[in-house]
Length: 155
Image 1 (spheres, rainbow, N blue to C red):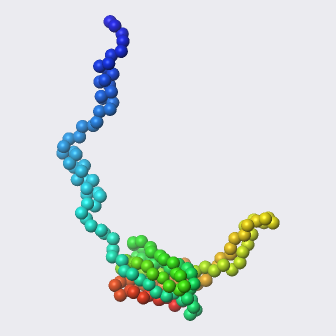
Image 2: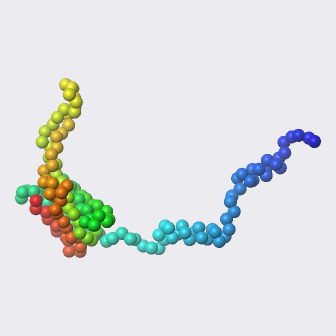
Image 3: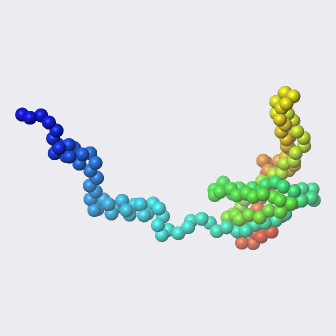
């Protein structure tokens, strides 16, 4: 018996190793339907409509120069939305519903050394200007609907 290279054996092994799996027509149809359903094909958008809300934010009668305002759904369902306050004014878009409102504005009150060395860089010392009852312990609420155009907060 002659020993040597058998091309036919190598080709058969290669076909088995690199062969595409055979999928029946029914199985392929089911896979395509599942992919279409899971991608939401034809289901339309499920995002709630948004309403434009804007207003003024004042602290002790003066406009809050800069800060942030956050709107959190009271039922904690849905997403939180927030925006910047500039020169006492804000504008955002929100879904319909009752929202808790958190307002923050910090002020630089000084600087301090980062390290206790002579050549240490400095960092700002920042304090919150807005009382906790309007941010961490908020008592502010806003009902957002089609009539919620100008929503002012006098703190």
